[in-house]
Amino acid sequence: MSNALAPSASSVASASNAKGSNLQPAAKPVSEKSASAAGVSAPSQRYETILIERRERVGLITLNRPKSLNALNVQMSRDVVAALRHFNTDDNIGAIVIAGSPRAFAAGADIEEMADKTFAELQSRDIFAAWQELLTIGKPIIAAVSGYALGGGCELAMMCDFIIAAEDAHFGQPEIKLGILPGIGGSQRLTRSVGKALAMDLILTGRSITAAEAKAAGLVARVVPADELLQTTLEAAHTIAGYNAPAVRMAKEAVNRAQEVGLSEGMLHERLLFQAAFATDGQKEGMSAFLSKRAPVFRHR
Image (cartoon, rainbow, N blue to C red; front, side, top):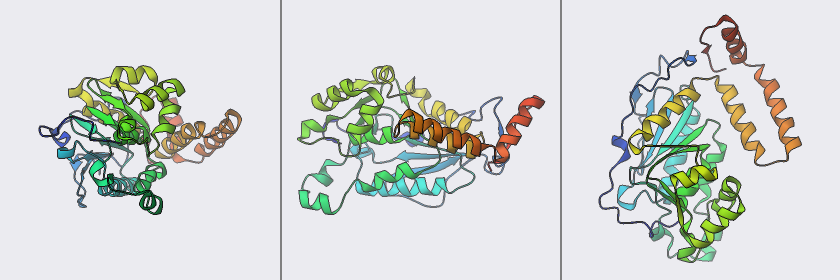
């Protein structure tokens, strides 16, 4: 969770200046709602620690505490959760991206905020509880990770549905160096992602791994050049957002279920979701379009 182990943030650049172009994927399904939601717009609500905007049917959240390498504090957890809820209830949003700055996605939790906490205080008021709200978001969330994703930053990235990383990204759980251990799910999600051996290695030694190592271990889905990170991630999000929204939510639910239950129960849950997909307009439109050799126009219902 620590940001104390990362280099000085004096020269951190803001990821909010990164630009993506030609974000509408070619030869992809056409969303009927995307026409009214086209372009780039900034929602009216303002936040203290993040920047948010809408890129057509994609909601973009940029962590914005550059002086602390985007260290996660209580206010940031409130802001991120509020923005996610906003996008999750917006019918014109089909997928969400969480990004950081070029130098750090998030270098850890805010140690200055935690240093003087007592056992009794942490028991009575869980300062990380808000982050669990990410698990209630039905729309896909992609983490665009550049630079450091350490401690709480690595945990936040793992809470997302998948990670696209820049070649310069580094992942780790260095809490042991501060006399503590991961506290936002790191020991659980890292083990599920990379296996017990590597999870034990990273958590007990506090060392970090590169983006290439993280991809080889199954923590990261894709690795791209740093200057292509935001565009690549937005393109992936646009692809997802163009598909039948109920089916996308069901697919996310099915995959998440696989990590929680045994194979038989997971397959039964998948079967029920598959059957439920046939109650959506999107199933009829998708199959009709396939048979007619045309691009589907999904109404997301």
